[in-house]
Length: 283
Image 1 (cartoon, helix red, strand yellow):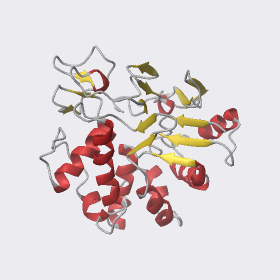
Image 2 (cartoon, one colour):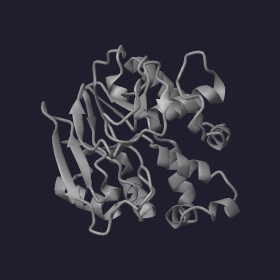
Image 3 (cartoon, one colour):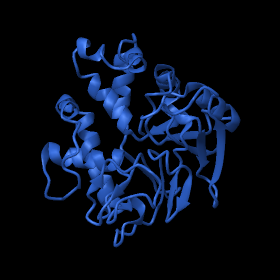
């Protein structure tokens, strides 16, 4: 039995198939952790969702910003849904769209395995969060997403404010701050205020900003963390963090990280030859 974390798939269905073949993945014995952003930009998001949904008994998923965006768009009118990009339209107007969206909406924002001592998120953690506080913040959002109240949250999902999580926040503002931290964070200041525009490699950010895992004075967390979201960072291992968004959708690689051994082991497949970043498109 093996447990593998997989970086941002983003609709790169052929690469995911090749990666599972390379892993010799056995759904009876093995487990897959997906770091989020299953959909958008790769061209085959519907096929990707159907594949992972078919393996759902063997999968754990933490939602990414693109996954939440899909769920938010699914709350809009059919006319509004018809105006999104063709890849997401294919998902939204598929016969099994209600099943796929309901399943996706029930997924996590943070997963912690005590036995393996690994924690999975999509993007980042607030510097003031302990692991327990991060779990509580994630669970608050997860409960709302899986409740009958989920349309209210999804219709108010978007926005850069508040830019920092605080225990004083309540309601939608608190939930949005948790979502922004867990699914959009790369750089922040010492108070956890996110810079949503800074996306390049460490060393290029403005003074006073830090990669979320290098903030001075941040809380200690006795767990190894696996995450995605930051393709410019690429594969990174340090400070207890293993980042595995290796930019498959931009012509890089799709990466799996085996979580069972003392030393993490990486398994990769190269992106399809046609993939490249269009000019002017950010992560």
